[in-house]
Length: 278
Length: 308
Image 1 (cartoon, rainbow over the protein chains, first blue to last red):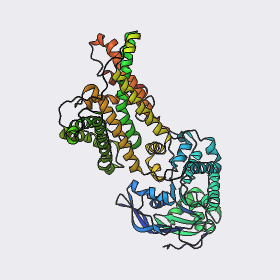
Image 2: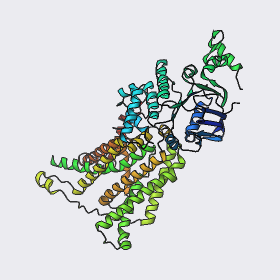
Image 3: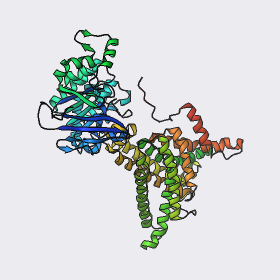
């Protein structure tokens, strides 16, 4: 089982650390069975795994959105910059600089793009001009949003909605963004575009990212470090490059093995036989 | 023609009062997804509390009964009670029910209706009282002399007041940070939570505002028809208004109210004689039913945005 040590991120000071958390939904369904991981300041960390592995649950237990879904962190602790955050309200956490972009985008459909972005700044006690500057910043990273600023978010495309959701989180002036499945349902080109912007935000605005992804290939290309989650446990962790080169990862998540692409049938069959945990 | 105009204007002015009650429903429904059946009871509670205070205050404070000081003091106290009632409802009744299906919340508000009515009558007694806002219900002389149209000063005053209230609420929703957050919460609770909007804070604000709207509606209705239990039923007239205007739209509540007010009066005068009269009380519901067939989301209701 993995411990909470991070080998070597951009900096070694503890930033976001998750210590052996267990999450139970509805008092009966055990979803996370002792997950430990950490995100260094200024890093991009990918959390990978199949459907139902517990990626979203991990993110939600950090952002404290779990309770709204009757989930509860029953064991372990979560620390951000040295302070326990597991019992905080999402509001307090956003004020401390951690914002989640939820899976499935969740834009406010009847608000315009610009209004969506402005709601992101709700927790800030900032002057009008500061908010204006943030808005310009977001528009500079996402020029498409500037074009669509007056349209109702519900009528924009999936890619634009994803950009809107990320932009909205950036409006809170966060230190860290938890990004849940940003590639969901988007064309590969748009996915690239969004990941490029994430990388840019990370480099220029010093925003750290923890991203949950099923799209292993893309995620590992942009992340520095990766964790692989299966059945509520972390089964593997390592530098993004190492993971991308790892034969098991290739086979399990990319459908590739030593002799190249396999037929879908074989992969499925093989997968069922070989698992890290069962 | 003059008669037609007179009926039309009278109808529109009373329609504004329906809008006022409908507004209370819309506010809460929009922000918390709860259809607050107790809105009518809140209107009744507000009017009764106000009248109750105007009766007891002179005895407590020695102020002159019926004076301006008593009026405003009673208004402030009634407003405070309404805000407290609203926030208490949110905290005690609805918060434990967060994440429950809408029908559960709806049932809870039905129960709340009886509770609020009971508490109001338990404290202030159940007899019918008059409420005097100091505006006489006389025709406007100018209109009567120049155009021979009868328009009540009181109705006009009530309409202006309601218009002012509605206008400022619309501005509040559209242009302020809190208003925007309210609309955001109405759209998607979870997303609002994820960007740090404190839901319970927002809900408390909404219920407080709904309490304020109920007070204004209660005062005007009470002054018109007397403060009595029947006040809770006039609030039911807000339902067809909502169906016409849409459950989630502030402008819808206004336009719906105007349409219902005008059409019920016109129907009474022009259609009533052929069917034996007295259709004013049910005509709005029939109108609402027809409307449901044609445009179920209402005139201004938010259409479900589906991506295809």
